[in-house]
Image (tube, rainbow over all chains, first blue to last red; front, side, top):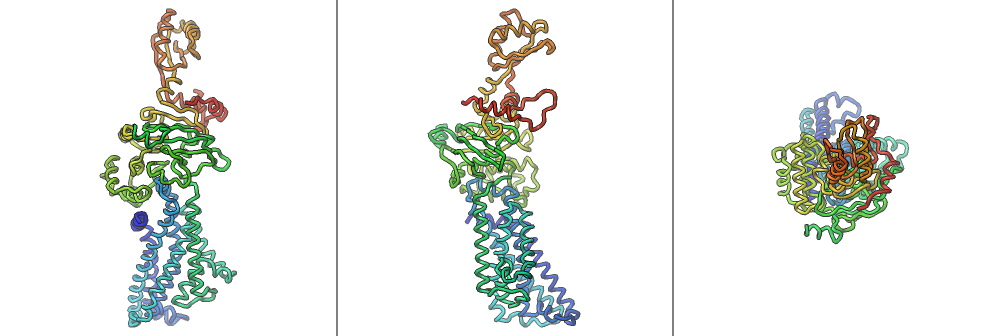
Length: 266
Length: 340
């Protein structure tokens, strides 16, 4: 427990934690305000009405969540890689191991604190997004009466739970890649490459890529709320959740085993 | 000392390695290292760059795993799965490692959450010991190299270890910091703890260590009490009148003082490769032959000993490069090492 609490303290004091949430919330706010401020022009464009749903409650809830999960997944990959990679780069893993700390326990507990921080970040970004959607709705002259829609509010905990697991899985991939690379920069670079590589590959190999970690994560979330899969094939939400859990456990297992066996130098 | 002997087991050794081998790909880092570090001493671990010092430190702290050979820490075997043995060991390996965005105090608290249970009160106590109380709230990224080094020493002392492994602890310290560090380490040894210091600053080791181990190319080439080492590898320089050099050389060689070097061009100086404790014998021998020395110095220079043992003896012509420890020479000396 003391290791977990110490891990949380480190992340709370880490500038990257605030930059990640700030970036997510900032971009979301920018989009929502822009949509609200340009409502007249937006409505006249093809699919303009769909864009205005971002500031129309209760639909705005799920769309905000979907947006957070799209960009949030990428940020989680980078954040997970940054945390794991810096433990190797800064030599702090070395210092802990030299004190007799269990390597695999250290890695897993460090990730547990990352997972908790990701949850907090999701909640904060969602709250900011909702607030900005209200501002955008007022700018656009759209009623906010749907804000207290009980059906939408009732679905939120389930959507949040699934979203959290999906984003945590994406963070775990970044964490594991950086662990294998033993480097912050290499981990972040490889994590981003995997993220976009998978999106690109899904155009050509949709039947296979739908089982890949980022696609499966999107399926868990999209089917939970928005139901929008677009042209890309998606897994059923239940199966997607199982696949996401498998990737999560698998990647953490790899990170733990690698940390346990690796020579720690530098 | 009795208590320490108990913690070190029946062997009385705080650290013992036997036939330790480690390779990094094709490069051999350790080629059968045998170390014997007694309890309650300051042990100076010397070697040229790339000799295997840091590899040894990493093995002793479980950061890397040996290809073969055994390690004993505090009298008990240490291998994979024995991480709890490190609860009694404090270490500073290579550069001090900290989170740059945390303060010195927060870093020590974060480290205290790992390994052996350590109360937070210990953190403030150690910040005081290393003189960082005033800067304890500042981010480590604003610390100087010397301050980071002091914080690293505090981190190594967190669990009040019985065995302290320090890799180049004087790095970046100012003269006052070096003196304070030396006093701290000597006090720890006086309290029965074992301090294992890897360094290339020979003067520092000479002032600090009771026993030294010198390695070259992954093998121990010499280990023993520092005074014994200096005596056995010492040199006496004696100055006579230039026209008496020839007679003095003959007299000393006849007296069994070998090897002796000297020439008339060296302003009457002769050099005798014997321990400094034999300077009076040399003086007496020359005086009995009617040759009176105008100067006599007993040199016990650790640097000369180190260079000789590691095969890096300077040529004196300024041609030697930084990494010039000769493999052939070292191998020859390693095989002919003097076990103690």
